[in-house]
Structure formats: structure tokens, C-alpha cells
Length: 313
Image 1: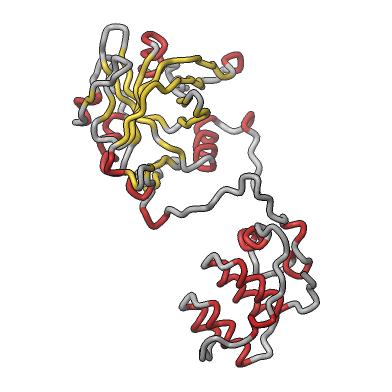
Image 2 (image 1 turned 120 degrees about the vertical axis):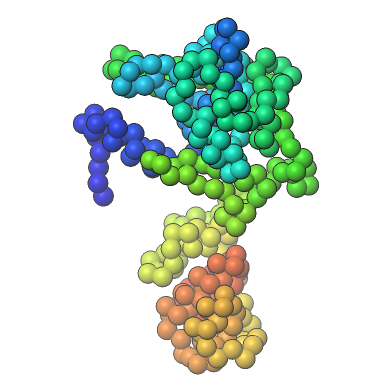
């Protein structure tokens, strides 16, 4: 592993390293208004939510290292104390890129990018009509980061006073990430698109405490086949499952472990392994992985019990 000391790495290189590792990052399309009334629109990937009662978000508009010039967004929010933030979708990708250019102060990037201004309810700054999600925000606090060391960063805390959501991105009254089509910032010139096939659900444990990896039987925990993700799924059970003797009984006429694994059919793979047996214990581990891939934790445990009869649940 390569180790970097930020104090000894040139800033452009450190910028690329940091933003490549801290990714993907949501993109805030921030609209602001100057004291003169000029509207500005700019994207920021130094952006996230930090509280929900009351709702608080933050952006990180940095000063230019080369020129020391401050962002119009930063100055405008300090002057007027308000802004809007709109989510950026793939359908707005190139318009966002146009708005990211360093136009002279006073330029209206809404016009340059051909985006629609929608009047806000609680602030005097419009939000982006093409966005499925927008927030009206008021300034709380600006934190200057390490100015004494020549730092160029800021954290601007913003309180959210209104949220606007298009009904087309809702499923059963909740925002559906598969419908949002958001983009995210990676390092250098890379972006990511949140398409439906990359979304997945993972229920949060809350007060439900699994046994943890430290409580897994040693032959399972030290498996060369099972990954950390696999072990995490196995360790999510509240207690070691009871052994089911009937699990060994064939339930299909499958006769090829490999074909069944390729087809994503762990039960068929297990039936084939038992029919062709006796299986190698690592074959059982591979089949257990296949059960985990389809979120059948119980099937994985029963398969591992077959691999290790000495384990006493």
C-alpha cells in the first residue's frame, strides 16, 4: 500500500488523490444571489447532509489556489444569507458542465446552461426546474479551514426551509433512487450514474445485534473461499442456527455443481455435490457463497454445517 503525507504532496496531486478516494460524492447545483441581485448557478461536489432536525446541509466552496479568488457562490451566500440547492441528474450532465465554467461575475449560468428558474417560497433565489429534488436554504455559519496554513477550504452550513420533490420520482410516497437518475462526482474527470441496476436495499440492524464475525466458528471465519461480505452476512444472525438434518436430502435431479453455480442455483449445486460426493469442504463453501448471493443466509449456514460436521450450533 502506498502512503501519502499531505504535507509533502503537491496540492494538485493531493486534490486528485483525495477526491478519488472520497467518492462517489453527491453534486449540489447551488443557486445564489449577489447583493446587486445577480443570480449565480454553480455545481459543488463538496456537499452533503448533516442533520435532519432541523435539516442542515453543507457545501465546501474553496478559494482558487492559483489566484486566491473566492467563489461567487461563497461571496453571494455570505452577502445575502440564502441559496437553493438542486440535485443533478444525468439528463442535466452537460448543462451542469457548462455552468461549472468560470464565467465573469454577474453572469447568469441559468441562462448559459439553458435551465429553468423556478421561484422559491422562502428565499429570493430560484431553484432548477429540471431537477427532481430541490431545497431552499438559509445560511447558518461559515468555517474557514486552516487559513493560518494557507488553507483554501470553507464549510458553509445551511439550514433547509423547504424541500421540493417531483412526484415522478416517488414510489409509495417515498423517493425512489432508481427513478432519480442522479450523477455523482468521482476523482479527476470521472463521474458515476446511479442507474436502477446498481441500486440495492440493505435493512439497517438498529437494535438488532448479530453475533458478529468474532463469534463465527473458526473453520468458517478462516475460509479461503468466503469473503468479508460473506462472513458479514453469516454473522448477522442473532444466534447460530439449529442444524437441519433434512437439508441433506436431495430436492432436485441436478447433476453438475458448476452448471448450477453458473445458473445461480445454489440448491441445485448442493444436490449435485451430494449426489456426486463426497464433496470437498471447499465445494461446500462455494455453494454457501452462492446461497449468500441470493440472500439465503439459512441455506448458507446449513451448507457450511455439511462441510463441517464438527461444528455444534
